Length: 507
Image (cartoon, rainbow, N blue to C red; front, top):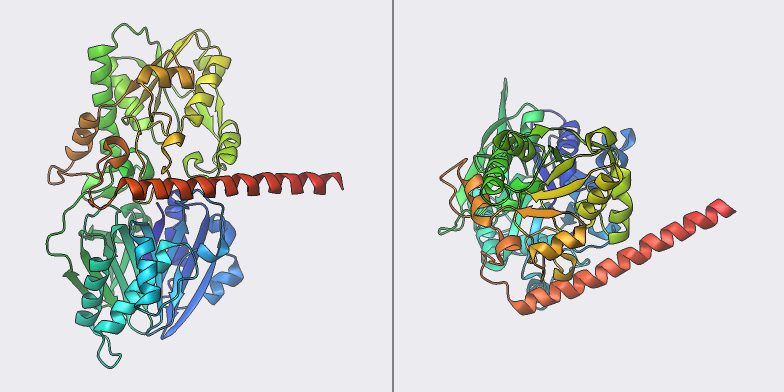
């Protein structure tokens, strides 16, 4: 998962892009970048860390232009930040193109080989975003006559990208001297939404990963980019769209609604907040049916994603709802931090228990999901240390038992606490007295009922079913091996960094 944004306006867009990335910061805290277009010239600045740390006044002053794209990076390979892999990426042949990408290509290695052997293009990093950029550049070269571009030529090139690239991807790109291009994979897995605002000189357009970015910047949501659809906004504000994949199907990632997206976003006509309320409702129904014997005194959410589910669950069961944990707003989301050591250390820094809400009580903790189990284990222990008599744990999502290969950092099965374990064994692992998971059909119903026109979801991390149809066991094994190697390297870098810090302190 990453955050992407693109803008074409009648004023300088650097502040719009910066503000848009701030709103999308939850989608990636590893690195950030902005590219603006001033005529046929691109201005770029990117670097490691949070948006507020990457961009200074001097950087913003240099990002001039009336169109641009931005990106917040979340590493999907479990590795530490690499300067070469921050986005957007740039290529200058045959046209100047910059590109930012959210998702993951499942045939990246094959494409790298094709680019080198057939297209005579060299990929410099391990990022599939650079692969995607070079495929787009090659298809533009093949489609253009005498190196001239028009909407039909650009859409033909995007159709070529769809023919070659597999997996999940939402893309924003700029073509030098022409305009903003955005498109979404043929399965509609990763989100992308269009907005506009009318000015005295015409419309200004914005595309972003989530509708909340449009809301915050005063753009009116027009619609989501459809699966297999490309949209183009030229520098004069002309808007063009084309369905580039005739038989595309919509299968939005269900984990967006469970955890990734902000609750105030709407994705494919589905309110994230409303889905989380309905997750709590269905979880409460399950407890009524199968866990009446639990003597629960109070329902406590684990901030922040689980709050709507916990509130609705407590209402359904007629139980007291209390805030039992205070969150440090300056610690990043532990799920998307690279390296297990960093995640473990940050959990205790991130949350602190309010002892009065736990002392002598049987508490039901509600979280959005249980992935690796590190956070859950620490929080259960915190509840006991705060004086809880019994600790029950409820997950608004089903057990995460399978790898995700579409842009979410959970690819190795041995890292998933639910893989190969029963619910009773998982409960023992995290130390709770009872563990209650959402059923997969209930989750699908909770999300789908908000917009009945969406009938299919990408839920491979729960079901093991990969909608693109090209994910083999050999591919999964390869991803896991690369992920394992990357995680080891991240742990080593983190240990070395701590050692260096210790040496500096001694000196």
